[in-house]
Length: 109
Image (cartoon, rainbow, N blue to C red; front, side, top):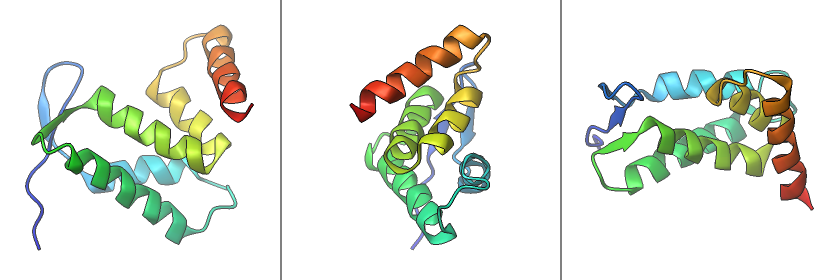
């Protein structure tokens, strides 16, 4: 079964094919040295891809894909979430990092 192409619209407006391997590298990096088994990480990756393709748009803004990733990581592992968020949101100051940590704390309360 071959899945239809999914295009990712980057911030620059450029379109590129969805690359599951690129997604997996970023997710595995976020989970590095975390107590989450590889099969659970693969499940997270599959769920992200399923949700992205489930929009049935044929293309997805990178911003939307990033939000799907962050939502999945938030439900799985706080540290992986913060690691991904720090790259995805390009924290430029300690204050922006602290804001993200505050959101995480609110999510748990």
